[in-house]
Every structure is written in structure tokens, then in C-alpha cells.
Image 1 (cartoon, rainbow, N blue to C red):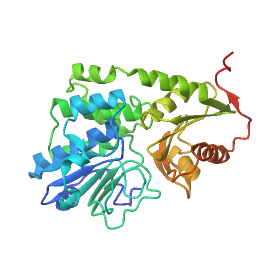
Image 2 (image 1 turned 45 degrees about the vertical axis):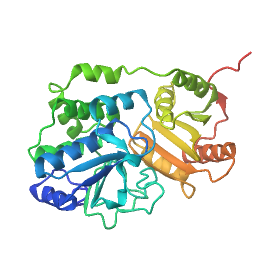
Image 3 (image 1 turned 90 degrees about the vertical axis):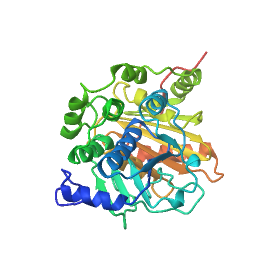
Length: 351
């Protein structure tokens, strides 16, 4: 890891010059994975701030998919309002440079240019494993699977360039680290910890509370109920197939709940939305990397990524029966987990 220039431990002046060169002359289009989360929203906003304040390079922030989870919507509206749906940015091909944060080209969830010819980014900053990614020809790479949050990597670049975030951005960075590492308890590293505690005295606590206590819509509670009723326990593995989803990122919330089940080492949630079967995986230990587990599960039929104890994937349905696809993925996952126990419903059948 130390000898790989795409996995640096520090951000040197030479690396800053390389990043600036890859971004110039601007404007830069900054994108992330579909259905962005707080880490990706904060990472993109931080990178845009670095470009503008360090080198006067303009950038635009564009996302694909939905920002629908209550906390994610609060981050977008209160802390990183510069993000807009890519459809509002006009001709995406006209941007001289493309930066991709918290995702990698070819990983399957980046949705770089919906409906148009795929284009390679000049800049990739991420903390996921590089399996299935296509990084050849990318001018600037900083990929560190050992770091808990991508925004920590971007903040390190800001600090090296002498750029300090304002209160709103500091709060976004703080919450990005907090949410991706569950308050440093899940995959947080010394870098994440250093930044987290460095920023704690600089954040807007009122806005942070608004994010953390964002209200949930009624359909979220209905989806939780359906997900629990659909959950099946296979020994030390719990799997829930929710069918049609009201929003694809709900699976992450469902998986976060199910992994807390007693005597469970892995929780897989599945559901479909707009022609895609989505998967969300949580494990209790990073000894068997969640990203590798889900990569093996969707191998040859879909794409996936993740790190540590968190991962997600997608399988394009292509008119296939959704129930059959879910059953195939369930069997694949049980084989990957070497789990041979029979199914047992999580909840008792209704009388």
C-alpha cells in the first residue's frame, strides 16, 4: 500500500500540483455515486471549495438518482446546497474536466452520464475497493480503502493547500465522517478520527441536530414493517427481500437495522426500483470484507462495491422476473457466506 502512488498516506505539494493540473482550466464537473449519501455530498462540496479557494477553479456539483433518505435530504438542503440534479447542468460533455468522488468509473453505481456516451473522469478520489473499476487513463487518483470516509481524504487535500472550511462545510464534513463510520465505531481510522475531533468545535450544532433528527415520512415506517415481515434468518445470516422500493436508498437503513439482530454476522437486503435490483449488505466484522462478499454475490450478473462492513450492489433486471432474480441472489449470497441452515422467519406469521 505504501509503495502505490494511488494510495498515499499524505498529500504532498507535488500531489496538489497534479490535482490542480488535472482540474485546470475548469469548470470542473464534480459527480459521485447514484443516490448520494452524506459522505459523498460533503466530499464533493469540499472538493469544489478546494478548487475555488486554492486555485480559482470553478466547478459544478451534479448528482444522479435520488436524495430521499431524511438525513441525506437534510445534509443536501442545509449543508451542501450546491448539489443539483445533473439534468439541470446542461451539456455535461462540455465540461473540460470531470471529478468523481466516493465512487469509481466502471464500479456500476456512478451513473456518470445517463443516456450518453460514458466518459472517463480526470480525477477520482474514493475509499472503496478498486475491484471492477476502470482507472486506466485517469490523471489524478487517490483511492484509500483503509480510510473510513472519502470526505476525510478530500479534507486532507484542503488542509495541505491551506484551505479551511467555513462553518457550514465543516458541519457537512463532520457529519459525513460520522455517518460513514457510525461515529468512528465502524471503519474509522486515525485520519478520520483526527479530522472528526479537529472539526467538532467548529460545527453548527443547531444544523447538525436538524440533520440527525430529520423527520421520516410515513412510507418509511411502512417499508420497515414490510421489510421485517419479509426477513428470513439462515443460521447467522439474515436476508430481506422487500420487492418494489419506494426509494432505492431505503435498503441501507433496513440493513443497518437488521445487522443489530442477535447472533447475526451478515444482513443482506434486496429490492427493485426503476428496472434495477438493488442490494445493501452489512457485516459485523471487516475480517471478511463486505465489498468482496457482495462482489462475489453479483459476479457476472451485476456490479457492486464497498469496504469494511458496508457494501451495496445493483443487478439490471432486463425484463427478468424480480422474484427469480432475488432468489438467485439469495442463493448466491448464502453460498458465498458458506451458510447452509434452513430459513426461519424473523417474525412469527400473522394469525
